[in-house]
Amino acid sequence: MMLSRKNALRALLGSVFTFPAFGALSPAQRSAVAEFLESHKRSKKYTLAVFNQMPEEGMDFKPLPEMFTFQRHFAHCIEFVSGQLTARLGIKSPFEGKDLNKLSKEETKQALAQCYDWVEQTVTTATPQQLAKTGDFGGDQVDLLRLLYICENHLIHHRGTTMVYLRMKKIVPEGYVGW
Image (cartoon, rainbow, N blue to C red):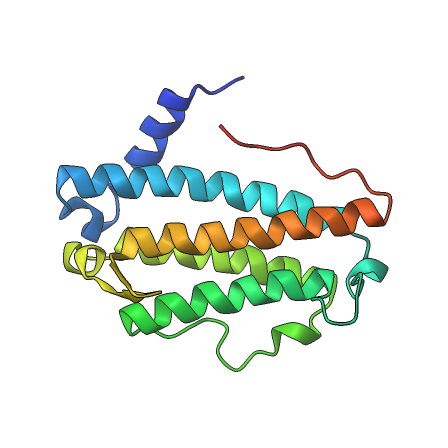
């Protein structure tokens, strides 16, 4: 059964409204959070699909010595996202004390999924004040939702780079799962 975007959003909103903090948001904040979460779920699915295409023996592949390995691109994204959110919100990272560079393919996949789930939980439980609070990023003052889109843009950059790595290994990357 194909689910239309409208019905998917309706289902998503229905599940998100069960979180107490979400109900306290203004209509505009609820809309922005719902839009982000819908995009975030698709990003998780696509990121894991791309990641899963590289065999275990390709996790350490890098085209040049100064470049990240395939696995390091994803570990770096987890570190970036968790670092940005913990610094902004004053919360503990689920990755604190973990060396993400020494994970197997399966462990990295689990950490990626955990990061996406943690971001979703963090966003759905954020208070209106946390969503609206601005902080410095690159010389600009950005609120939490804009910071989340900055994190997603960062991940897209690294995911795109890993698609080149897949092609260098003669693996055709998953087709784009956008809107």
